[in-house]
Length: 246
Ligand code: MN
Image 1 (cartoon, helix red, strand yellow):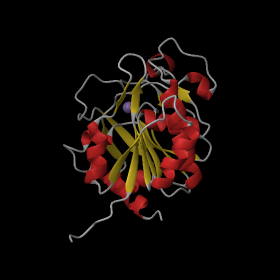
Image 2: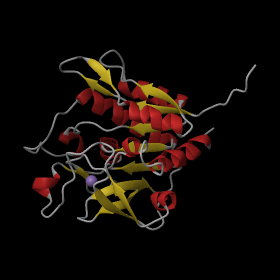
Image 3: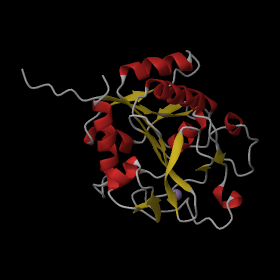
């Protein structure tokens, strides 16, 4: 018998195309980053129209020791109390409903959570915060945040807040990040603090105060990890927190 190393099970949320191909979608970078950081990825699939989203989400969270909320399209504005802005992109009510249930179950259980891009926005909405629906038209003077560049290319700097988990992970006040978003967190949800901002003031990271590890980043560390080893440090810190869950 060989040595069996128990990796913490990490849920990764998926996208689902309910319009054209009626299929589930997950970018493999998330799986690689979780596996490389020491986790065992478990794809968290919504029950589609065949089951209760909240029940499925709670059961999945009880199996896992961590949750990754992944990137993707816009969140339905009615979920944070707004009418749709003219620049609103594609929305997906099935994905929104399931991921909100995952985020709420994770918060209730203090399950370590790494929320990426849309995932951070979704976590913020799940906790009662709001969003800027379109940076370019709603935030005068903002720089480009939806950049036509390779996924692995850092294009703007962010200032990391003293005392945050991110500051501890990266060990400095400023880091370069990639940027593929047109929406942003604002305001941060009650119980959350801003952990990083771009030079134009756009929120680039949030953390839930007093949690084991509940961190949202607006950039895509999973896409940087192949070229910049330090991008994986955030996943490693997340896995350390996941290992502490019984
Ligand atoms: Mn950005």
